[in-house]
Image: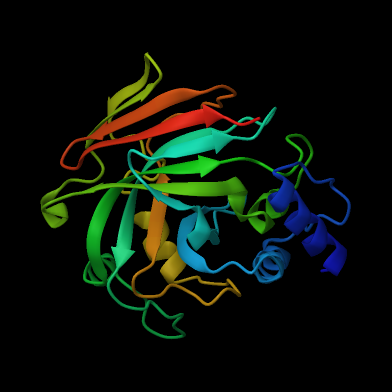
Length: 249
């Protein structure tokens, strides 16, 4: 993959702007060198990972979340002028040990749970830097699936006892209750993407390490916001997380 694509994505991240489709990767394998190259240019480090599946091939995928983008519940986040932001309510885990790529026996769900020190309610913040139309999905993955930030909320006291596929989640955007349902994860069990990615890791950014947070996918519908408001999420067994979204100048 040409350095020009990496350079342009790095500039887009700095400016919080959109990048053109020129030279966009079209294969998932080509996305991972771009992720690593952009991170190197920006001097960033991995604070965690977002995991999921390619909507076409269903292959597991992962993207780094920069350590500089992590904030705590109750903090504020500034919108870029004229740029929409998508908040997603998610369950995330903090790893208690490294999960290196394996060539033999696969990680099981129980083994993954044994590698988790805590489970958190979180917001993942998305600000897409690639064109909304006609962009190959691999370009979205190369751009870390649009991640711009991560908000850590409260931890579940007894996460091993919870039915993660059936927890009630309520989400307010300002005064509007936009989600009030049990479950909501596309895979049912939110741990499925992490188990699949652990067994199919392809990143070039160092892999999953102890202390990092892995966020597991949205529990709420995709809703873009373009103006300031307060976000509040409540998840059964976890508690409440919030974020004050303010308007940039």
